[in-house]
Image 1 (cartoon, rainbow, N blue to C red):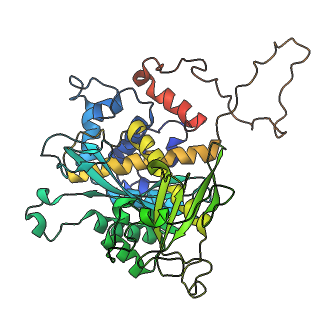
Image 2 (image 1 turned 120 degrees about the horizontal axis):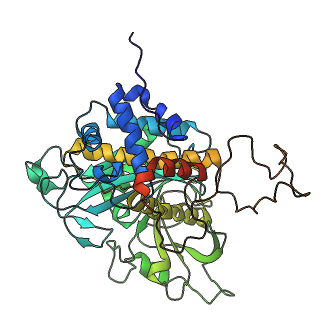
Image 3 (image 1 turned 180 degrees about the vertical axis):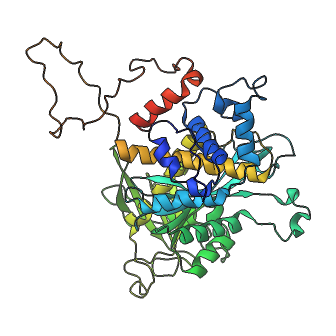
Length: 461
């Protein structure tokens, strides 16, 4: 067998990470393209991460440059399988004890829309884009993420193609709705080996009978958000919505909470908040039924819309008659609130994937190239977690060393508490006193050096 030709090494620990994908990239050119694409995504953002932005050349004049054309070929035509790369990424995350899914985590299902002009790009139509809150030209992806209190990362993702872009419209046999794609993502997560306490989703998926029904049929636990006015069929005088049911719960204040239970929510920045939760009874829902609806809020008297959740779940109540025979462990109110609270990592993930790593910065039209770009962005995101757990958070700024001739100066003793491990000395931060909003000078010209410094210091908080 002919010996595989080596390609140029990526900077710092990125090389060791990229080498784990070699068997799925084949020849030297795709392996080199994989490294160049990832390092371009990881460089601090100074402009949109299009192909010209990734290599640091002029957006117009530099487009014909060999480095740009090489990445264009890698993204659009080079023979490598994006799904195999993504599966390898997930296998590495699942196998690593630092990032392996735990049984108390959640699988979050959501959809993300980004502006895209024109009609020639695959999947682009005029759907509702949640990121801007209106109907506009763009592309929508249905995503899944695994999350717990310590770590979160993208699981499988699928693009959504509206019926208007299908050859036969709504009659097209290959048409899949968002809830159908969401069900497929749950199946894909289970195939990868993802372990989770519950599937969590916001109101769009939670209101959909197809999605909730598929989870129920598969025996999978879920915590799904409901809209306050989500109605059921009932007599005119009965309760029809979760908000109406919540307002019927007696509340006399913190000293006389009635049916409300205090729940302590702990946030990553260290602060705590007291929320109030209650089981709701109306229609087919109740703590003794197969499906429960819970309400959690900061103020039971007013039920403020921004800090009130209505949650449907099939996790049994600890006191329910069927709790001992249920296929999943019971969950009290605090557990239900904790599980849905993990969904907030989705918004944090969007900030990092879209604003820092260029999720929607692609300028390609083909379905294959778009999927490849997304999977490469996910690889860059996962590499940041690897670097974080390998090198740890940034160290606090140290006092400058005393002069060499000072009587107090001494070399650190490696291995003692507070001493750094043996290895090459790490230079100081590039700009410790940079004012807010300042940018690094000419980052594209120094992208390799900046990337090496980035991964040594781990992701920014």
